[in-house]
Image 1 (tube, rainbow over the protein chains, first blue to last red):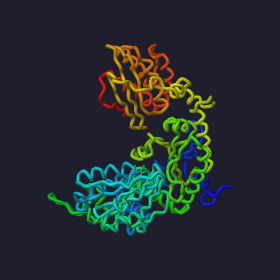
Image 2: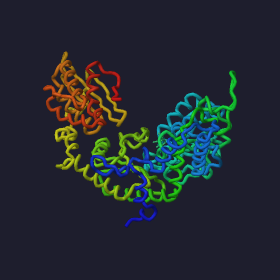
Image 3: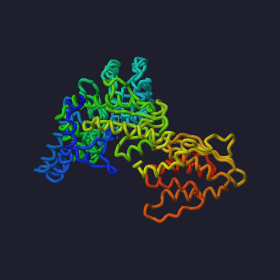
Image 4: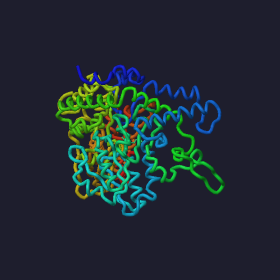
Amino acid sequence: MSAAHISIDSDAIRRDFPILSRTVYGKPLVYLDNAATSHKPRGVIRALSDYYEGYNSNVHRGVHALSMEATDRFEEARSAVARFINAESPDEIIWTRNATEAINLVAHSWPQGNIEPGGEIVTTEMEHHSNLVPWQKVAADRGARLRFLPIADDGTLDLSGVDSIINERTRLLTIVHSSNSLGTINPVKELAAKARAVGAAVMIDGAQSVPHMPVDVQDLDCDFLTLSGHKMLGPTGIGALYAKRDALETMEPFLRGGEMVLSVTLEGATWNELPMRFEAGTPNIADAIGLGAAVEYLEAIGMDRVRQHEVELTGYALERFAELEEIDVFGPRDLSLRGGVVSFYASDIHPHDLGTFLDRRGIAVRTGHHCTMPVMGRLGVPATARASFYIYNTEDEVDLLVDALKDALRYFGNGPR
Amino acid sequence: MQMSELDELYQELIMDHNRRPRNFRPIECPDREANGYNPFCGDTVTLYLKMDGADVADVAFQGSGCAISRASASMMTEAVKGKSGEEARQVFDAFHEMLTHPPDSEFEPDDALGDLEVLSGVSEFPTRIKCATLSWHALRSALDGGGETVKTE
Ligand SMILES: Cc1ncc(COP(=O)(O)O)c(C=O)c1O
C-alpha cells in the first residue's frame, strides 16, 4: 500500500482521460512525457466541442446572443487563469499561443525604456531555449549583457556568486521556475526579492511549475509569469502571460491590428484597454475556453494534492531507479526541490535507442536535449531520456518503466539477449 | 524474446558493430574530412578519408551516437574501403534507397550492399532513418571535398 493513493485517486482520474485507455503496439499506453505535453480530460475536450457546436462566434464586438455568450465564456476563462495563479485582476492575463510567445511578447515590448546599453539581463544555465534565445537577441540589439546563474553538480542553481551576478546593473531577472530537463525547482521567490532589491524586473517561466504546483504571482512578487495551456491539461495553441498592470502600462503593443485599438484614423491609432491592447486579431477563443476548463479541473483536485502526488511518485521513481546501477539520474535528490521529472542516462545505451526500446513496450518517454542544449553540455551527455509525471500516472507505471529499463540494459548489454 | 520488430532493428550484426565499431579512429593527415550532425538527437560524426588516386585507401570515423548510427558508420567504412569514389557513391545511393523507398514498393537490394542489408529494418522506424544515414551524408560530403557540417535536418 502506498501513500500516493491517499492523496490522489489516480484510478478515478484516469477514467477522465479518454486517451489513457488506448494501446500502443498492443500494450497499454504508459505516458511519461508530460513535460512535453499533457493529456486532456473529457471536460476540456467537451468545452471545445460545446463552443463550436453551441455558441461559436467572435468575441467582444457582437451584439448578438452567440457573441455575448462566447465573450462571457472567453472572459470567464481569463478570470479562471487569473484566479489560478492569484493575479490581482484578470486584466493582467494576456492570451498567447504558448509560453514561448508570452516570453517573446515581453522580449519585444518591455526592453524599450527599460534596458539601456550596459544593462544586464540575468538568467540561468538551465533555461529552456525559449527563455534564452529571445534574450540573446535583446542583449545584442540593446548592447546589454546576458549573465547566467550556473548549475551546481547536484542540478540546483549554484548561488555562491548570486550577489555579484544580480547587481545594480541588472534590469531583468528571467528564470525558469521548474526545469523541464533536470526537474529542479528554483528558489524564485528569494531570487525575485534580490532582483527587486536592486530595482530589476522579474520574469518567471512557469511553463513547468503552474501545471504541477500552487503558484501565486503576488507571493512570488514577479512582474511577469508565462504558462502554456497544453502542459496543464488544456489544448495546444493557448498560453498566457501574466504581467503586472504597472509593467503593462509602460509597454508598447506586441502585434498591431484589430481588437487592440480604441480608435483608428488613416494617420494613427490609440490603444485599447488592457489586456486587449496586447491581443491583436481574433483570439484563440475555443482553446482559451478549453484552458479555463482545464484550470477548473485542476482546481477541483487541488494543486497541493497535485504537487503531493508528484512528490510521492517522483520519490518512488528515484527509489526504484536506485536499483539500476548502470543508470545515472540527474537533478536534486531532495524532493522538495524537484518537480515530477526524472532525467536519466545509461552510459552504455544511447538515449535514442532506449527511447525506441521503451516505445515498443508502449512507454512514452522523451529522449534528446529537451530544448536545453546548454544543460546537456553541463551534464556532459549528448542527450538524456526523461520520464515526467502528472496526476494520472501511477506507481505501477513507474514499475513498468523500471522493469523495461532492466530489460533494455540486458538487451543492449554485452551478454546474450 | 517477444519483441520481434525490435530484434529486426537491432540485429546481432548491428549490435556487434555498435559494441566494437570498426575503423573507429582518426586518420592522421586525412585527404578529406567531413562532419555530420543530427540536431534531433545530438549525434555527431567526423569522417576521415585517405584517397589513393580515385580510390578510397582508408576511411575511418569518430563521434558519438546511438547504436544505429554507430553501426551504420562502422559498416559503411568496411563497405567502401578499397572502392573507387564512384563505386562508393553507388553504395550510398543503394543504401539510401533501401532505407527510404516507399513502404509498399518493390525493393531489390543491390548486391553492392552486402552486410549493410541488415540495416534494412531501419526503414520500419521512420524516426531512426536519420540515425542510419548521418555518416553516409558525411561520406558523400567528404567525397565531394568536405568542409561544411552536414545536417540531417
Ligand atoms: C521550462 C519550459 N519553458 C518553456 C517551454 C516552452 O513551452 P511552449 O513550447 O509551449 O511554448 C517549455 C516547453 O517545453 C518548458 O518546458
